[in-house]
Length: 441
Image (cartoon, rainbow, N blue to C red; front, top):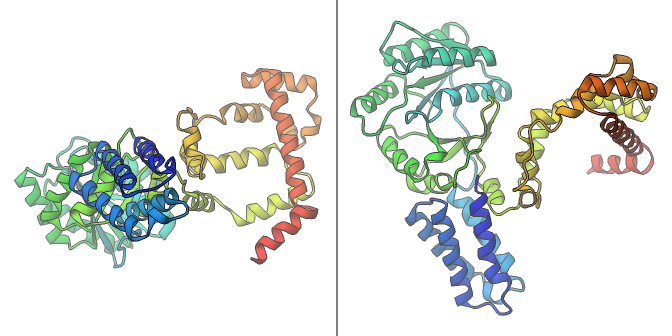
């Protein structure tokens, strides 16, 4: 997402960067190009116009014309204004109450049911909640079954009444059930509807009035572009929702909805869906998204993803093994599994400042570790824990068992040996002292 916009903005700033002398005309030309880039990204016209006018006013007010590096100052102003355009700071979800109730709303095919499962996963694992998913979509074939399957996958209870066609009653009964069975959070998955469907809009308004939810989230498919903004306005007028969820941000989308929706409906984007897996959900951080749009990476989110997979006890165990030069292939494959849990490899790499532009045209397969894993899993337990015994005949057998060749096996073993030596050096001498200094800070 946002790749085209990032490229266009970068070209726009080059208008300033290449100039020996900066003038109001240069700035105006740059911002004219910025506005075109925003419009091409399907940003609302009035939003794009207001954005560039604000940037121009601030640029001239901050003496960009006389600045030592006007190009950098202009990028900083655009970065700040992009963050403000998308809300400025992240806004948390209200899950206070016994139980707290979240009402999901959105268009047909917006991914509401899947997102309900993702949200339950996040709030269960990161907030310690005991959620209850409620199947209040009584119209779509297999909607109830889909939610039950999701609930089973994530270990979350699902409340459903297959023979009841009244979603208002189902939602009210789910809250009673939650109170009786110790659930401190109820997520009500409703039917997707069209904003022009008066009967369906009246129905979700009735559900809102009946259950008085802590949060009403409007789920919108980012692929719908500018139409998403117009639909959000219609739903907001009826429901006065608390926040927006953008799904399918990993798709081939121009990103206009993310940039426009906050300014048009004046409601924060709270979550984004970033993939098909049930853990592919992120809290929306406007300032981090602005950095990514401008090609600056998102190192904070990368560190957070790493911390989610970090096990302090496991880290201490590994440190002891490394210090004794006992780090083996079982440990190595364990670390690979931790990296894979963090998400899509290309997305992770793009969070590193300066890397995103370098790899945008590369096809980084999520199965990039498949060959390495096949080789390691073709080893016997003794070979994995004692790599020193891997002689020629063993390597030949491993190559045949993993569907690779001896050269690939030799290459992996060599890389493993070099990695093990480097890791051991880091726990001794200068490396150890450096880590101690870092801990003191």
